Length: 404
Image (cartoon, rainbow, N blue to C red; front, side, top):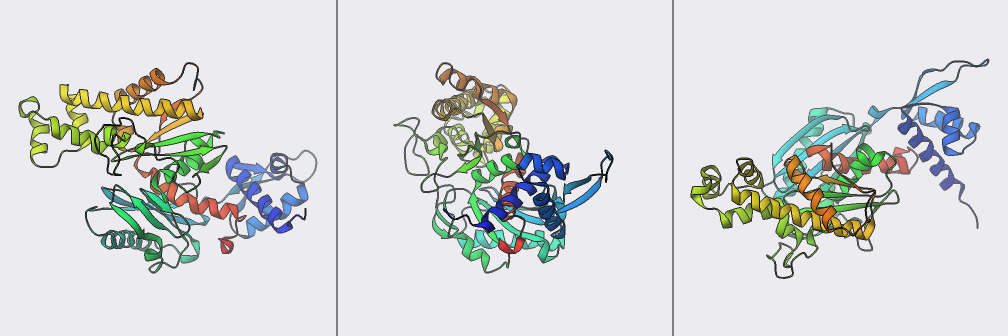
């Protein structure tokens, strides 16, 4: 079989660039050892990467008799990327460097009941505001990454179905490309969170198989298997929130009964509290319910005040989530499960309950090495991950921005 030398060259560049980024500061000889490449090949590639501004010299090591070896480091601020988290409550837009240092951010209310065109226009305006605020030269912008809830056609950038937004076949990317002369990508929001974990969170520590679970207004998940994001045959892998937990349970926004999202998401917790609220029990939560402003966080706050109804609802949600995680553990035996989203930050007691129920329901001895952790990237996770897809694309083409 004939080997395409240009493909091999690109792979070598990617491996060298990845080795330098992962090491912080590294000698060429160490790069050669870690990549299996010859010293002359490494020297040629690093010279090219220095010329592109992606790598720079960072001092010299101690000489062992000859010329002192040169230390190299990755230049994280050579390029900047815009990342957007299109959430049901807010549209969060950031501009970050290639080490996920956030330079600027801007957030506006989503107003999810508006028409798709209005929301997309709001997304575009938010991006324009961040780019204008940053004042970065066009050539230093790698592009724009978007995270969107729902099932997406990644080739066309079409939102095939988003239950949270009630969108079906909405052309998100093509509408935005009219306004921006930059590379653009859109991914499922939980896939974006998982990508953020792989590059900048728990997944970077030699974790090859992990699952990112987004516990928020809805519930979603994304799978990294053998070091790669797994999307499935049609791109819909990871719809944990739409796994049926109760066949006669409440109707989900997707149209099916008893989904995990309909039983244990932030929206489900708020809806159940609205249905069960008894005014004398808790004046604060009753007032918010009467005003139509009740959210999951209010239910958690009521639980902190030892409100029995709130405690019962939250305990029930934790059990459903733990049961779902046990099923995932039994099926895939991941090294780690990373919890993301607003509910993941609802308190240690809630997370402990989820963990306990997961252990209770998983098969004996299954998942004995699986760790369940809460993301450290907090509310910026999806925006960071959306931007990271552009960084990954740059690495995949060996650092050649023109080839993206």
